[in-house]
Each structure stands twice: as C-alpha cells, then as structure tokens.
Length: 314
Image: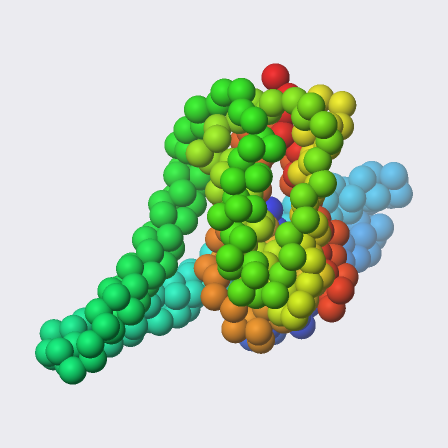
C-alpha cells in the first residue's frame, strides 16, 4: 500500500522530524532549487528579449523552461523526501522494537533466573506468580511479532481477507467483556449504545477483530484517570458505523496528520510512557479500507478522542 506524505510548510519542524540538517532537508532544498529556477527563468527572459524580437516567443520559452525545471525539481525533492521518511521510519522501527522487546525480555530473564536458581523452594506459593510473568511477557512479544507480520503482508499486498456475513455487534460485545477487568483496574467504565436489529456486515471477522481490539485497548490505555469509554453502533445508509469516544489525553493538532502512519506515536503519548508499537492504527486503517470501509477520528488534546469507522452491509 502506498504511503502518503503530507505537505507541510513548516520546514524547520520537518527537518527536525527527519533528523537531518537544514541543508539536507528536502523541503529546504526545494526552496533553494525554486530560487535557482526563478533566477534561471529571469536570466533566460533577459537574454531572450535581447536576441528574439517577438515577446510572445520569449514568454513561451521562459514558461516552458520554468515548467520543466519545476517538474524536475519537484520530482527530485519528493524522491529525497521519501528516502528521508524511510530512513526516519527505519530508525523509529529499531527504537520501538528494541524498546518493546527489552522490557519483556528483561522480565523473562528475571523470572527464568529465579526459577532456575532454586529460590522457589524458599518462596512457597510463588510458582504461579513467576509462571504468570513468563506467560504475560511471551504474549507481549508474540503480539508485537504478529503485528509486524500483518504489516509485512499489507506492505506486500498479500493480506487476504476472507469476507462473510458477520454479527458485528456480537464481536464488539465479546471484546467489551474481554476488556472488562482491564477497564475496572484502570478505573474506566465502558458503555455500549447500539441500535436494535443492527444488520450484519460483510467482512473478515478475524481481521476486523484486530481493529475493534486495538481501538478499545487504546481508549482504555490513554485515559489516564477515572473516565468513560463510549461505544456506539448504528446503521448509516449502506454501512454500519462504529464509534468509540474516550476522555483521555487526546491527540496534539500537529500530530494528527501522521496518526495512521507506521510506527508513529504522538508526543504526549510518548511522555506518558504507555507501551505500544505505533502499528495498531496503521493496521486498523488498512483492514477497514480493504474491507470497503473508511476510518477517521476527531480529537482535542487533553479532552479525548473519538475514532469512527464504517463497514459495508452486504
């Protein structure tokens, strides 16, 4: 799936985002090339008026040369921009994966050392606790590997969706039940509002479950104090609309255009130090769109976020 690169006129912030100096930044180089093109066009015009009598021909030549140079400059700059973005994402990938794996691996190492040291003989009744640590951290690593495998399939265009008629409300209710104790432990209340006789949707249930799971997990995780997560299901023309509203940290305005990109995590989320790979929303967007739907969101920093997506009715 092609990656979109949003246009941003804040050159300094883009250079900082790519981690390059001003003279290596694609947008800044484009401005320099633009200035050179304008200078070249002006020079061409002055030379042309000196040797060519018809002003229309001079103007046409200048316009043609300027257009060609701008197209070349834009193409080169976009290529450099994509390379810079790929380089940035590669660095972020290494940082995120290293960070996400370091914690569970450290916990695994600690639990294995305790188990193998024989100290469990002195800690009667602790076996279950240590084996629980092993199970939880192995699960975290498998979850990250599964996300990476899905992203790889999406990127290669080989993610296969086995669509069929699905009771979407039942899927949502099952996940609300699954997240019940996590929500209680986080002091969060989950509310479901659904229309009666909601029609079935035509999707791959195994894949759409990943979308629902990710959005509910995020809504709970990013609501740091006592709060409410509201989920709504309703029919909209030929679609079923799912919305989930939290009262969490929200998304900063400057980060919203990047929120569905791979490995991206908003600055305020990074400050909260919540775990996450930055892959969930990218995967969710790809699955929803490949299912014939659309996903979007509304957010206000410090007040919460609402994610929406629609799925087609057969």
